[in-house]
Length: 270
Ligand SMILES: [Zn+2]
Ligand SMILES: [Zn+2]
Image 1: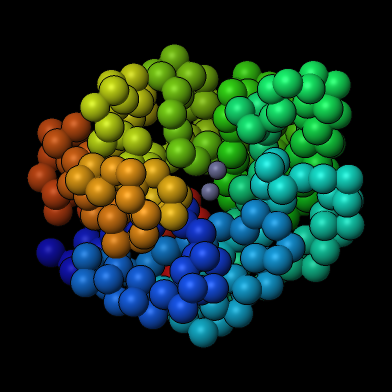
Image 2: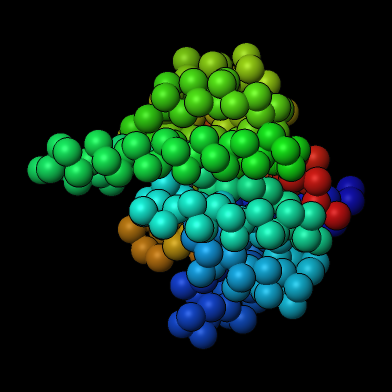
């Protein structure tokens, strides 16, 4: 058995908070001890892109990164940010564009007009970044909350190669993942899959199959059982993988081998 391939990959994490609190070294050590060999720290706004570029050059074997303007980071200045984003093209260890997409969940609830304005900005920023994604031909990490069908429709229109598209933190049911898979896209799974009330999400993982399965933490959010409700960190992707092995009815080594191979292939990791 190849040990290197059995090490887990946290395909979606946010390291900026750990770095700012001086916790990065201990978080990386804990990940190493939990068998998490690599992680992808996902960009959300210009402030973290630069940091992630620096971190990945400091830890080239462990930390890869992406750049993208998260829908919740979109404001009136989104165009400037997207121009900045294009300067990352072709940089070594940049593995993906994202996370980008649509988020209706965090829109203001008591001001309809404002919510519509923000959503329009999100759609424009998403469309502009999908254009870049199409040019770059790199994997695209999609964030979609409360906006699944709209997000799918915008990707359909964009001409982006669906085989490069992952809906991260997949938290819909089997029908929706089928819609992604039929187009050649996929979903990846956070600790939500370990939650008691997440039977739909487990069914979605089964519907897609282990041959496309990838794990992520989305740390510092969404800690898996047995850490649910606490601060999440890349080491905890171990629990998500362990639980997922049971969902798929395979042993842990097999789940680790397949999900890591999938992540390496999908993101083109070295
Ligand atoms: Zn997200
Ligand atoms: Zn995220």
